[in-house]
Image (tube, rainbow, N blue to C red; front, side):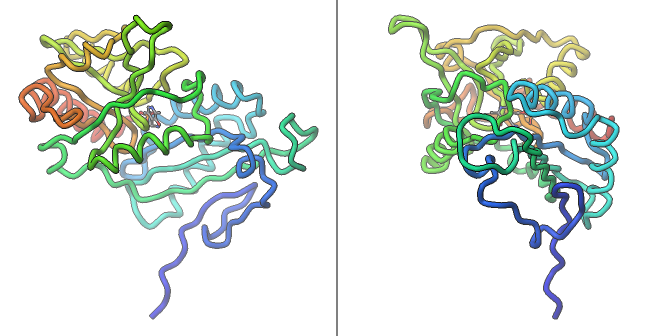
Amino acid sequence: MNAPASPICWLNGRFLPLAEASIPVLDRGFIFGDGVYEVIPVYGRQPFRLAEHLARLARSLAAVRITNPHDDATWTSLITELVARQDFSDQSVYIQVTRGVAKRDHAFPKDTVPTVFMMSNALVTPPAALVDSGVAAITATDNRWLRCDVKATALLANVLLKQLAVDAGAAEVVLLRDGPDATAPRRLTEGSSSNIFVVRDGAIATPKRDHFVLPGITLDVVAELARAAGIPFEERDLTEADVRAADELWLASSTREVLAITSLDGRPVGIGMPGPMYRRMITLFQQHRSERRP
Ligand code: PMP
């Protein structure tokens, strides 16, 4: 029997089997986590919100002062070819750009060419049972750096936080950032790999976009769908008390779409089941993405 073929990836200017792709150990992505990334969902071989993902990639690269290796037209054709080369039609394209390979020294190396890597995995959207039941989450203090708006590959804090959730049998950790002094309430930021929404009295709220939060592309979809449906939607400061008093809590990301958080720290959120606002939003979301607007 033949071994299954290794999926095709892209590394530094060529397509090759993932199993054959390798980079030097002195790559600054490996040594320092000195790079940025993107994850783009692909439905029926159509990248979803590609322009927005490429714009965020450009912003992340600019924030860490790595020259964007490609213009949007080149990214688009590379992604299109990568997607066409996979065996499956729903995919999640992963792009990573690092500052490149250089002798280990914190300061930027001179004349180093960025490392560019792309792969595509099968996209497994949440099964209907999870959409129907919701997921458990726990809270934790947000101890990440102060540039969470940059999609940096240095994700150690997110990794450790997510593991707290997994150890507690939960799917996500809802992050609360300490206030400026000991008397200030903790503020909701986001999840370890998702944005978080608080629903109260028929209105949706999510923290406003600042350096504490990744500007999620799925968040934008939720905001657009809410506004188009006439559902009140606001971006504002949310405290721990707002989170604990929520009728519904949701998480959203490119690979998990929108999921209801039905228990928080072991206590039910609202009625302990996905609420009516969630059911309305997930219907709108699924309709919208089945239209496969690029
Ligand atoms: N916040 C964090 C920390 C994330 O890792 C993600 C997932 N990339 C998100 C929010 C959601 O972003 P998006 O909807 O673009 O996937």
